[in-house]
Image (cartoon, rainbow over all chains, first blue to last red):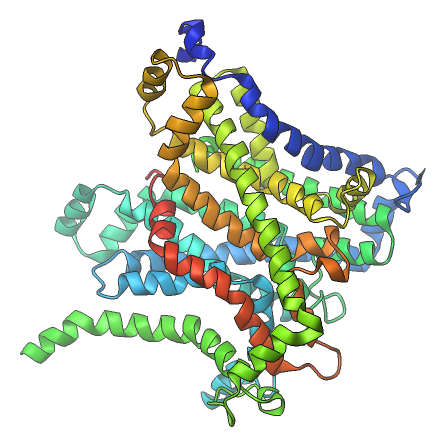
Length: 293
Length: 278
């Protein structure tokens, strides 16, 4: 606000037209399609002409077991991936900011999967999770731990894909936590060291002071989980049956089948789901933190 | 005694390396080994040294497949990635500059819109409809603009946070010297934003290069193939050519690997510094 009281010559240094290039591209390629989606979700649509049919698409959407399964799975997937990422990456970040000789090597190893193609990761884990000859089951079998059919068992498939998602995204979450931990002033650690051992340090220093990092990790992986498509499509195509279908794979399947109106209704359901979950979370977590991201 | 001290010193390293190694390195070794095998050997999915080491033959076969489809895909993916990144950095830096320096009503409106852009997933079929109507469907430029629109929110947030660390006195000095706004931006601000720009370049170029959904919807057609879609040549319902598939995975992982080796320090420190406060 301070700036408005400065002389006009200074203000002219920050001309508003600097918003223009970004604004034009964002409006045409993001805002317009988003608004169009609300209208076309109410139509039977062939891309060339659209017949208004009211809420029929939504009615169909919520009455079809495949589509409602997609809705439920999207939510489960987002909760599972963001929860696991927090639970695994916080201890990892503590480990990788401790007095470890190999910490920079280990940091790089954990971060590398973030940069690798999701499709490639999906294909690789598809082979590793093969039930009868895959490496994972051979290892589990040798330890006498059973041989689950990771991707073929309907009650396991979504969970297996979520595990791979966590594997791939752990690097980002860990880096965010590391940033949080490294920004804690050393005095706190000193005090904790005098007070007692590791538990005091964890419970009374790291946990409360990396609160913002925790929120950032939860929010980012939740948003990512709600719109995830590539990995699920590569590993299971939503199957077996529609046991691991999520909203994005339902949208794609309806699009392939030529049901553009229905596909777009799925898209609108996705907007609404994301907004009603993420917006309150963000309010709750204090939205300033995310903006400073 | 010295042995005990040594063990006390390194046991945590050893455990961490073992666990992280098994979980994070074994899959990559598996990719490499499978890419070097013969077809039948690869299809066994064993974690063994190839019966016959033919990595270079497999890679050559991948490169020659479908009259050099891989080269076409690389060309398309590089054009899309490089042009998108250039536009993203320029447009986002302009916005980040004005937004951070002039915190008025326009800036707070822009900030809400950016947040919405970060959260709301893209509307797929309406975007196809729009691209068709402006003649950009199935064109590289169509996908480029879509990628720019989808990625800018992240880029603006990152650059704006960094912008706050550049003292305003620097712009003011330049203005007093008679510089025009665009000159202030290009000569003073852009060079100083460098660390944050590197973060944006690394994160979004990897995202765009690895994107599968964008090309799948907005850029169909054999001429428009991108690297992420090349892998589907070797997967069929009955007999997948696993050795070629994994050789393909290896080939398309080279560009991100080079990026990683060049920028790994900046990636982690760039994301660490100023990313989150306490």
